[in-house]
Image (cartoon, rainbow, N blue to C red; front, side, top):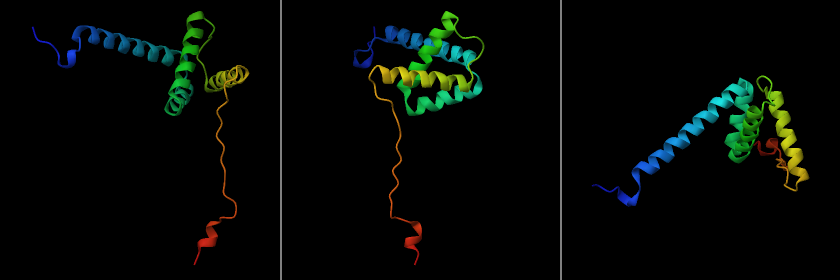
Length: 115
């Protein structure tokens, strides 16, 4: 009988990996059914910036779909509404709302460097 390098258990890890892959595929299928194209694109952009926030949103949408709270497909505007609700509830529970602040340097002008 051959053992795998590193003491890994082949059949069990393959089963777990297959199970995770099936769950991920099921999640993608549900999201494709629940979200319209623009909302899916927005969610994928959110996932690039904040994967944990995207997982939270997906979890909420999955629960809503399973409980029958969603009627029809979720549009991008509705998804934005869900995001706003999440931000509002997050600020009430004490977590900080994430914001981006742009600070421009004053006094520097590209024209100053012309020779």
